[in-house]
Image (tube, rainbow, N blue to C red; front, side, top):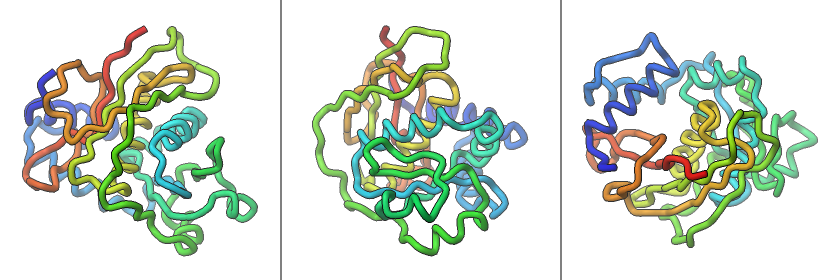
Length: 240
């Protein structure tokens, strides 16, 4: 699959139509970028999630993110998806906070803790207590990793294997968490990822040049060219 600006425009427009039908727009890059900028200034009443992160570990995040999203109610999914799965990552040790805050999900290794989708006011105490997660400015190189999605599957299909590509060129650890989590959340919503599936995480500079077809992409504004779109993560078609 060749990723072009047209490919990215079509995918971004489709994501917007699903999450916020009233914002549906023609596949025009400038219009899509305006919408993406509006998304980052979501009103305080919109649903958002806070994730407390102890360390940067993409494999741990994949497992915890998929399990957290799979446990949301249909109402919570609808509210959070309308806010484009907005998630704030804060630095801290989740195990030191579980007695003080009612987290919706604690990662099995204790490295992440997730709140239910809530308003900014409802999450104010936790946000004041901890700082935004920063992490390494440049992602460390990591070998290919296979990740088994935990839990009991609720989809009517056999488990599948997919490649999960993560773009690292010019991407900080903090941004990586946002891109990866967004792709995973929408993939779980759409039934592309479910318990029992196997994901092979592959870090690449950019997704351009990858020939296998993608089932889903995380599309955002290209910081090296603010009038262009970029694929920051991609999920391949399934292999049973």
